[in-house]
Length: 146
Image (cartoon, rainbow, N blue to C red; front, side, top):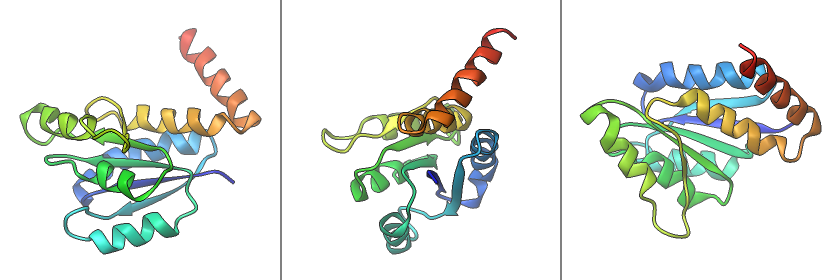
């Protein structure tokens, strides 16, 4: 079974992680939700990233927003960063996530875009899962007609 890991830097990010998990549930994608800070718990973060069987990571972070980049540095699996609006309208987090150095990419969605991050994770997983691809196509058809 394909899995996604949703990692947030603090419990205050739970609302966004719940939004992402709602989309993943809708598609029947298994997921993990963890609170692991790049700054406060780097060893636990490293251990989780190294030990998980997730194929895609969604990382939700505000302010310095180091979490997605830290995870990308630890894995070659896709990492999707969700900048959280905390200060400066979330632009600070957006710029922090999107400006990764060459060789350590992080896909980045819009500020507070947890649902789009989950949909992007589903699209990535659907590349190797025909049933998931069909569910995604049906989801898109329904959205287009509403």
